Image 1 (spheres, rainbow, N blue to C red):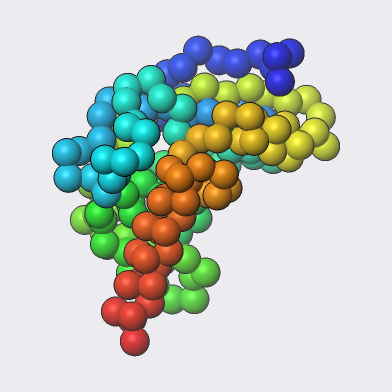
Image 2 (tube, rainbow, N blue to C red):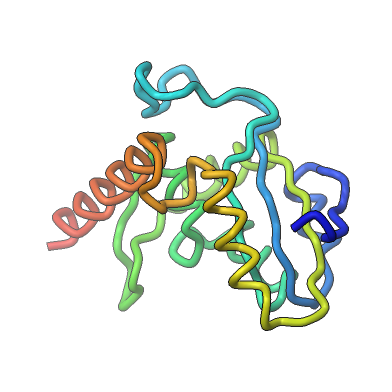
Length: 172
């Protein structure tokens, strides 16, 4: 991990536009603040400016960025954020995951632009990307990765699961 050449942390929307069509690893940071009414219990470690929130991998960084930028149904990060921000998920068509209402998609996108930063590293060989991501997630335990290693990760998983169950209930 130490030999990766990371970009400087930049606002997420700017970083997504700069991502190349190449495999790599990315880290997402909180550069703003969670809203006061966010679903983040006081007994958990507080999320503060500068905290690492999420680590991800991509076979194509630019394509992956599109999912985080606009498609909640295709982004674990967006679904996790939506759950802790209290945004309403709903099922559409045959998607494997619910997406947000159009209004809440816009709210989430605006919040991401205002409050998240990102750095990425291109990995020349696609083979080690998954192992690199696993090692970083194990070492760093970012709270929005749903690995179940920390109380924060468990909370995010539970909140996202509840949101998905509510969307399914509302569908039927």
